[in-house]
Length: 196
Length: 196
Picture (cartoon, rainbow over the protein chains, first blue to last red):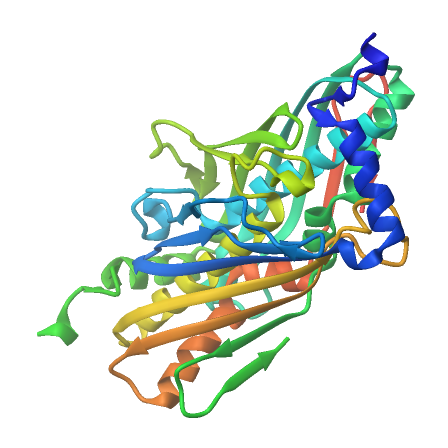
């Protein structure tokens, strides 16, 4: 009975297959735009508000209130430790997206997952941020991720599930390959556009 | 009196200058390692635990309990909307890091900031994630960020403060330029290493 269930790994298979079919037929349904607004509070403490996005051909209105997420820094980085810091949030996003990519695609292929745990490490030298040494990059020099995956499948299937992460995860692609970012300034007589 | 204050923009200037001096003298103090562990719960819902890190020459032990952050997906992406999704967390991290970079470096240069607000948009086509069209990248194709910065300074200084973000922010560098990521699998007879 398990195999004919319409929910696998917590994913509604009928809906997943329907989504793949719909987006395959009408590519415009694949276009998404995610949005965040952020407000500085004090020092290294700031808050993001996350609610609206565009996707599947329309503005989404299923979130009644925004999610509020804070960033802060630990004391050694002159903050008050009220929240994780932005570099830690990158690892959070990466872990979540890789896991969801494995879970959804394993579900579509009929693999029932019992457990996915991951640990992530990112190496960063703050001499870049402190503008001490121009030769150091500002961001992570390397990220290592270890996955512990469990389910009733062979070692080969487990490796195949692992590979669904890096090969399909949006955030993996973002953090691995980089994204063009444009930064602009509002409320000035002259608009400044930094295209990177 | 304002100008001689040791706290500017919520940043302890004496501590900031002390940090720059200490790391400049002993480069080993600049090495940081951030860590996140993540646990899959169900479907697109998973949780990260963020507590320990290494930095400034020692293991940090100032956080008594881990921060817990969830990822989920909205209904249209087969989730239950319990939390922002990982791609939204990337924008959150980016906003926070750019803002903190501006705030800290403006403080070091004597500029008092009254307000920083930002709005971010990221364009993504889920045909990549859904494995529908191999030509589409999985992650964001473009990110646009607009800053509203206010304080008692000239338009030129405001532009200089804006530039401190992209030129110094660790997360901007990560998301703009990409990071080498290695993914491994534990608890298997054979260790699988995907070096990307």
